[in-house]
Image (cartoon, rainbow, N blue to C red; front, side, top):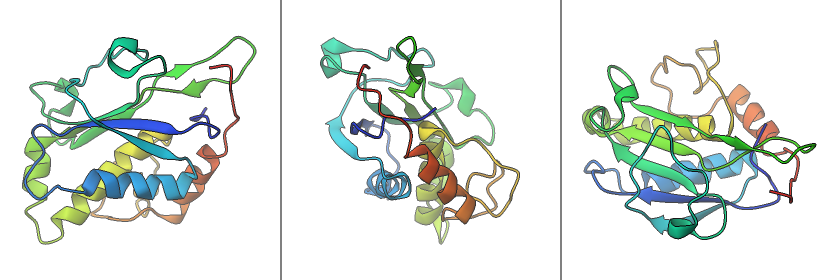
Amino acid sequence: MAYDPCRPVHYVVRPEFAPPGSDGLIEEAVVEISAATGLTFVYRGTTTEAPSEDRETYQPDRYGKRWAPILITWTSPAEIPGLEGDVAGLGGSPYAHTPGKPFVYVAGQVQLDVPDLTNIIQYPDGRDQVRAIIVHELAHVVGLDHVDDPSQLMHEGNNGLTALGDGDRAGLALLGSGPCVPQL
C-alpha cells in the first residue's frame, strides 16, 4: 500500500507551538522524503486544524472536495497522549479504496512532541536530530515501518542517526512506485 504516485501529495502545517530554531525543518524533511520516494509533495499552507486520532480523511469545508492533506503539527502529550514518555513524534496514514482497486494511503498525519523536540534542538547537532525525527515520521506517513537494523533511520530506537540509510531509501523508492488509482 502506498500513496498514489500519479497525483501530488498535499500537506499543511499547524505552525503553532513550533520550537524556537525549527524554522525550515519541516520543509527540509519533506524535500528529503520527496526525493527518496519520487512523490510530488505540494505545500497547501498553514492550518489551525488540531491533530486527532480519529481525523476525518475528507473535510470539504476545510480543504475542498479532495482528500484532506497530510497534517503536520507541533503538539504535546497533553493534546496527543501517544506522545507520552520517550516518543518524540508519531506518523501514519489511513487508507482508502474502491472495490477491485488497490488500497491507497490518504490524509496522513505527523505529530511532533514540542517538549521533547525543544530539548533536542538545543543539542550541538539538535537541528539535524529534529529534522531526522521529522523525516522518520514522514517515512511512516508514506508507509515505512520500523526496522530491526540499527544502521537505518527507521530503527525504532534511533541511535542518533540524522540521515536515511540505504535500506530506508530502498523502501521509500518502492513506496513511491505504487499503482496509480485515478478512481479515488
